[in-house]
Length: 91
Image (cartoon, rainbow, N blue to C red; front, top):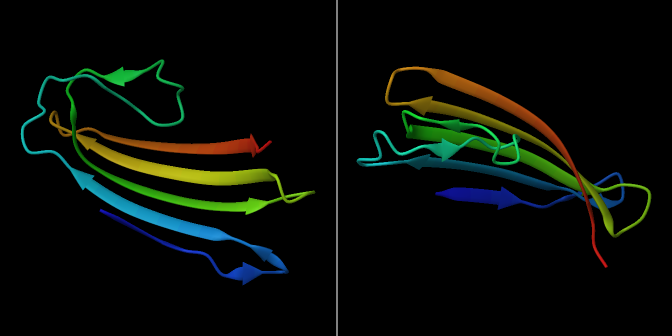
């Protein structure tokens, strides 16, 4: 479940995004954490996850920068906090 809002901030469209997800029975299924490029997967499986992101064009309209945050809870009771800074160029 998620929502987004995209107002114009300082003359450029800026997208704010938030979501929450929860699994019913994924204990023991390794799920990759965001921001690690799929290199790390929690072997316990994620029970729930909150995700927040802000994206806006920088320098020119087809170059986007996003600041992302993920807070995930696994079935072993551990919590992971992941911050990423992503850049995207559209052609």
